[in-house]
Image (cartoon, rainbow, N blue to C red; front, side, top):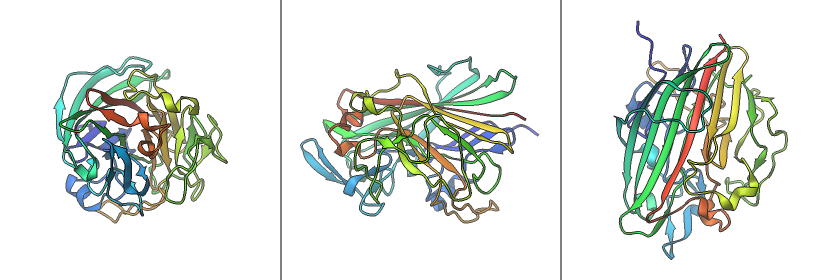
Length: 345
């Protein structure tokens, strides 16, 4: 029997359907693309756009000298690009594009291959101004640990350009994979380290209320363990608050930062998430609620955790953060993410 490919993708949402470490798929998924259409309320594996996370009151206060009303699909706020954001759209691809290098990755990538997905998002799509062309390039390969273990590596590069009539729009792209390293129904027992405990304090709707501050109970670069209920986290952590107003629209030349490391002592599976992005949403899966699908067991709360590298939440409506997401004609929005997964066994 042939060994399944370490990574599998779908045209729907340019979704990451599989990330295999040993014999374990460490991302939550469904067997078929049609299952995602019917059941993917949690956004398993989706490429999220045009703007990830939340926009306050489902309104962009000012672009092209006017305001724009978006879908209010998360209480009064707008979430993950709307009712049919990019994760619910069919992308063109996968198209082989030769092997892309993963800049900033220490160690040589072996057996690499790259595929591209593309999407045209028209002016007015989910309320956003301007037609944009988006691409996601996935580069998969392997590395070796010092002890000789095989590391499965996935590089992701996002590029978005504004075409058509509008002079400016807003963009913030991420991937919404849910990771489970335990091989069990929940993430209990997973040992996690965050690169920073600085986060954006938010109101009850998840909209930032001020500048980054320390998250109580989590220390930067210090391990903590996910229990059956706590810590219950769904917050945007900031890599370096001092750079908030200096983030380039294209972060690809920025160094890769190891945002999150995770390990499960029973499966001995490791995960690292690195990115050029200034922030990341860390979410412990409280609201997952998926029924049994084609013999695959139901998934409930804490059946996966998310690491969503991105720009600041609601940045388009905050003058001091706005440049992070403001895409104008002739500019390029871009970023890079790298996942590394391996087992000690």
